Image (tube, rainbow, N blue to C red; front, side, top):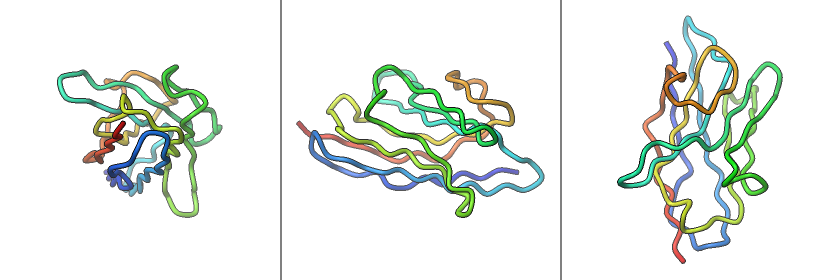
Length: 123
């Protein structure tokens, strides 16, 4: 079993920063890849960033490259998404996800998902 608990969302102004956290609790399974996705009202779930835990390799959506950073703190069993230079178009519910393979931008490949945390960016 794998449980993912997200936190860190909130209401900010354009240009502000937020750091999202995803606490990973693993039992019986060991995750290898962690991903962040987001979903705005009326839109499909969108890939944001992903990390392969063993290698440290990362991938990012073009829309967030240079602004967002995904990282892994193994001591705290926590994956972070540092979001800088936030824009109104970043407004969405952000989800943490995990799989047992390597980082992928495809949501269907992730087995476990968190509950989501709301990020709202005002202009």
